[in-house]
Length: 414
Image (cartoon, rainbow, N blue to C red; front, side, top):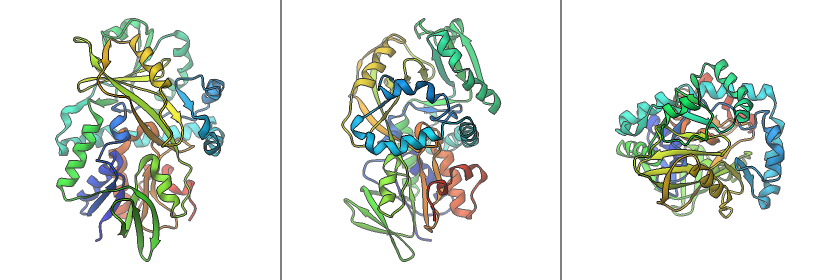
């Protein structure tokens, strides 16, 4: 059989490649940067069991005034990008209903239930299991009011059977002795895990597939066009590449790749920033900590502390801004002791669809064209399980039931 060409060598692309190779398929990865260089490198390293609440849950209406006036550290927007973002935002808000949020949460729960096991499977093959920490993921609350406002999220975890424990200030000190005393409540999602270097994990998966014979083309796919019995990938550095079967897994750039073919996808770039700082003495965190009111996630990575921001809605290539990262660093320094920066600020882009669900599966009316993008904040978490399920669909021609809610047909008509 001819090789499958995968556009994108992030966590989704390399995970899919691993599972296709295990099923006997040849694979070629096409990406302008080394594997794991974009969001797969810059994320908070969480393999999250509990991130099932969609971003357009009904609670978004309560925060809308702060978002609209760009006063929230959780979500900011670039005013110059608003005309382009407006249609996406309208669809996003139209879906912010209890029924739709419940359906999306249930769908994500089914997908993420296999996420940690899928990572452990690839880690064993790639010999990088030493990077995994099965210590959970901690939400920390500075005030009683903030903790009460998230009661609905904890009730959702209960309904979906997602294991978690609730802690008071004393319980938090027992979990994380080096956190400051500013936090009054905490929720530990016990089935979550984390890694000490998500970029290194993704590169290990990429090394696994390259050692197994996968090809790697260093070029940006600027668009696709149909040809008899397949597609042509138009690249900036490798010319035109003919392919029989193509998977678009290019993250926030996926919409632009498909648009050239006439396939329109409402994909937004949910940009985020991080910076790494040196440790102070023996100060460490056993797990990633989400400061809910501070609007950042703090993770002890290999060699330093990483502070990761919330969302910035902007064009994927718009200039960087520093306000979110500056606010996140200031808040984080009141929560945990860390030293000076050890690396420059980093910016990446999470791909987001208006309904908060990824797009996984066959593109209607386009034989041999598949999608695997739009995972938003759960891209690193769900990469391996998505790759395993999509490889199954491609091999059998049957969509696993867990993927049905993520079918491209909800946005793309044949």
